[in-house]
Length: 351
Image 1 (tube, rainbow, N blue to C red):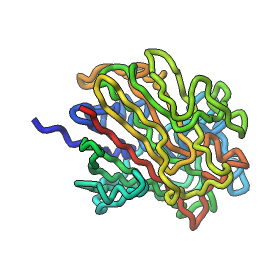
Image 2: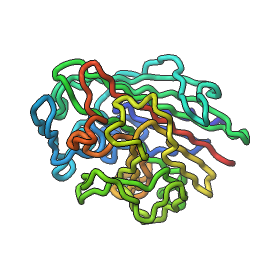
Image 3: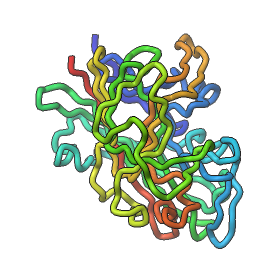
Image 4: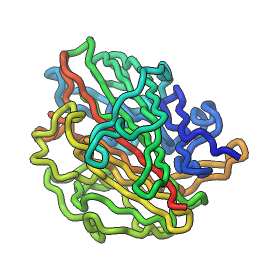
């Protein structure tokens, strides 16, 4: 029996619906697009925008010399673009666009060793005033799929992601911070328990009870060491925080990070399934979340998903950057400029 196609995507939210390693789908999702509309409170697989993560007090303090009120859909804050963020919108696509190279992996170009490659593009027009955000923007996400081989000959399923956003009208400037909200589970079971993860950094932004950074300085996350394995247990560690990938300075991060080198943000491995997974990105930060608040009922015969049924790695800019003078250049998109970034997922089995 042949293995299923490694990747499937949906126009709704430009969602990553499947990412198979062997016969295990390592991303949480639903069988049909309509199921996502009805049940996807956790944002399974969604492309998140216009601004990922939280905006303090659901307000942009100053853009275009004025303030903007956003939807308060996470306590007093705005979360993941609002009530109907980009992950809840239907995108145009997928459109075949040839094969884009994925630079920077293993010291070279993935394109040099990428077999069976294919690139598809999803596009979205986000109107001026969409969820309170100023300016009309054209957004796209391009997925590039293929396989590589490890030195030992194992087949690696590779997914490259490229985001691009351009302000085309309605305002002189806006804010953008795009990511993907897939939940990964390497166990093939109901919990991520037993997964071993390694983060490239232990520096994070301390936050208040609402998830808003309380300082522009980073500190070491308690119990996490850079590049040292962490065992995910049934309850602990319980993490939902923004980790910082040691840039030269927060104010020097470019709006378009595509020319920046890919950094291996997180590696994960499960000793029973022998599945390996890596997330690489050009982004200066990533939210790492161990899935405490997942609560999805049984759908279409698919078992219910509860807390810790997946973990997230969300490469992105800093949380609430638009309202922090030292950070806002990371997310401030003006006419004539492009916001862009690159992400790569790699998954394989040692069996």
